[in-house]
Image (cartoon, rainbow, N blue to C red):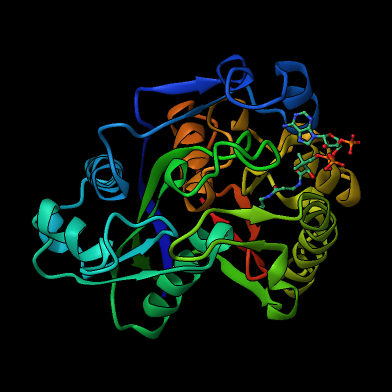
Length: 307
Ligand code: COA
């Protein structure tokens, strides 16, 4: 059994902060942010929370996949910015969706979180334990950001994305995943604190480890990079995405990006991008997609999915 994505959804709160807005908050400029990151604006949750954004993205994914909430057997939420520690976000989402049959839990693998949740869903489906799984990435990073720190506050944004997976006999899926806690100090956030980051260290880690794990995945599946239709990467920085494309010797057009609009939404970035690609009609049955995530932990990985 393989999990096939049958529905996608995304939500970003209506309020956003442009680079110009941030010029009034810290010593930065629109030109610097665009050149170094590719980001132009980021959405900020004022009324919304990780729960409300997750519910909106999930409703859309279920409607899109024509799945009744009561048919969902497992809800996995990836978040580092829950509204509350208890109950978990997945249970709150379950309540609001009326997904009464579902087993629910959250997981935290930072910006690799959606990928890890997706892999967890695939593992449950492959084992035969569950057939219909809702996977959500939702983040209200604006509350974890130190708005006086120009090294970090320009990067992050709020939003949610969701996919619904259903188990089918045919389809292709494989994964690689890694963690290295020894390098964890590069990107941290205490439960009572704000995000702290060694940007250069994280940049170096991403441009080295992401191509390596994608190559590992392709070798496992005996595929070449040119066999992949789209590489859907965690949206952290345009220069990281472009560097990965270059190292894999793949034209950048096959690395779609939307970070200009959202900044880095951590767990939410891959499903938001995937939803936008689906809405634009660029995903066709049989296409091969590679998802790749990376972030604090350090944690990183890639997975192959057949659309
Ligand atoms: N506006 C203006 N100048 C800034 C700035 C900002 N927002 N942030 C840093 N600078 C300055 C620095 O102080 C430094 O000045 P100096 O040369 O006088 O010391 C200069 O710009 C260069 O800083 P540096 O840190 O070398 O920039 P960079 O090219 O590495 O870009 C990041 C910084 C954060 C954009 C980049 O390192 C990055 O994207 N790292 C990965 C972060 C990430 O993706 N994290 C999440 C992973 S999930």
